[in-house]
Length: 111
Length: 114
Image 1 (cartoon, chains in turn blue, yellow):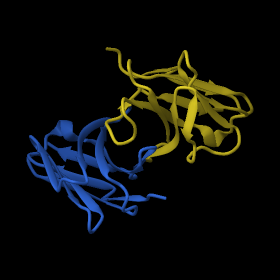
Image 2: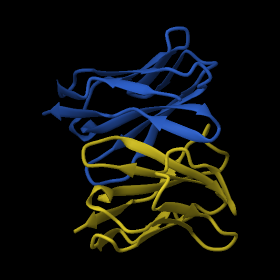
Image 3: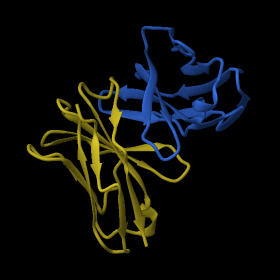
Image 4: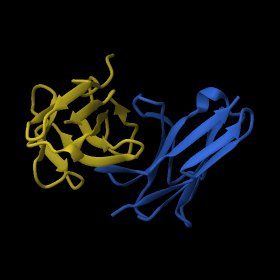
């Protein structure tokens, strides 16, 4: 079955710097790759997603890139702010029945 | 439009008791997913249901766990004879079109087994 790996597991950056989180997946059939943000004690919320027919997508300070050949995708957050501190999960959908999440990256933005 | 609702938010059970977790999807959504999240870990897929059908239960333990999504009423995740290892946050999510589209998560039920 699909396996999603995510690195790093923890990440600390200074406010204003960029943060990059990388994920790899194993099932070449996966074609939808969402990213979720989960603040402490809260529910996960979608922040951006990308489909396999697109190589890059941007939404204000957040961007995601996808390399289908290498089976990896990345989240880029620019000009980080303290409110970006949270756990970020990447995910892949090997079929229309399930979403497989990575183990998460705990991001801390230091003011 | 109310979001995904889960109840109870917190549930304490003694070992051997049964736990029933309820999830009402967003209005108009017919796809429901259950996930388990252990402390400081990721979201583990358990089961995917549509009305009156279990589509994929490959992530659910074979024993003690069951799920349903009846024609009327909320989806229910049932854990029989709970053990301490069942202590976790259980999240329900719904979508309008299946796994290839945004999932909206409920607030979760935090189950503690004493």
